[in-house]
Length: 379
Image (cartoon, rainbow, N blue to C red; front, side, top):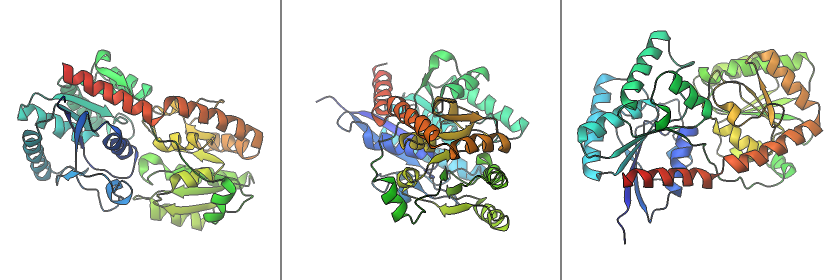
C-alpha cells in the first residue's frame, strides 16, 4: 500500500466563520486512506465562539498558543517556534495555510524548518479593503508579495478576490486556482414545522442575517435598513444570528428605536433558521465568499447583498437575488421588492438553489483540494 500524503493544515484560530467551516470540512472529507492530515491552530478571543468547541467537536487539533488573531511580538515568536517544532516532528509533504497571520508564520516556519514541503496558501478573503488604514494595507501587501514568491500554489475562494490580489501584485496568475467553498446539502423539515419549533409567527415575512457582529459586517447598516423598512411601512421582521463586539450596542439601538429585529446570538441550527426564513441579507463592507450566503442559496432564499468582494460569485443580480450599492436606501428598495412579492421570492430563490448545487457542493470542494494535494506531492 502506498504511503499516505501528509498534509498539515494551519489556521490562526477556528473562530465561528467561513474559514473554520472550510478547514473542518477538509479535515473530515479528504480521503484518510490516501492522506494523513493534522490541524494546527491557536485559541480564539474571549469575544469569539470557537468552532471546534461549539460545532466541530469531532475534529482533533494541535493548539499552539500565540497563533490566534492578536499581534504580539513575544506570543508570535513563541508560536513561530512551535510551528517549526511541529513541522520537524510531523514532516508534512504539503503545508496548507489559511488566514493572514497563519499564512505568514506558517510559511516562514516551513522555510526555516527546511523539510521541503510544498506550500499552499488560501486567501479566504483579502485584506485590501476595510480592515486596515492605508499604510498598514501597504505593509500587508508587501508581506504577502514576499511570501507569494515562496509559495507553490495560491488559492482564492472567489474570482474577484483573485483578481484584486493579482492586481495588487500578490503572486502571478499562473500560481492561482479559484476554489469555491463547498458545503453539505442541508437536511431540514418543512418551513411550517421549523417555524413552530423556533416559535416564529407562521404568517410573518422573515429576513435572516447570519454573521459576526463586527465592524466589517456593518450591523449598523443592517439596522439602518430595518429602520428604512419601518419608515416605508413594509411588514418584515429581521432575525440576526451571531455575536461579536457590536452585539450589545446593536441590541441597545434596536430596542431604543423599536426596530423589528430579533437577536438570536450564536446558533448551531443555521440550516433550520434559514429554512424558516423568506429572504437573506448581508450588509458587509467587504467579503470573500460568505458561506452564510451559500447556505441561504441552498435553502432556496433570494439574497440581498452589496456588490462587494466575491459575493457576485454567489448572487447573480436579478436572477438569484439583488446586488445593490452598500447604501441602506438601495438595500431597502431591493428588500421591499422581495418582501411584497412572493412569486419573485420563489423565482429568485429557486434559481439560487440550483446554482448553489452546481458550484458550491462539498464534493466539488473536496475534489479540487484532493487534486491539488496529489499534484503537489508529485512535484
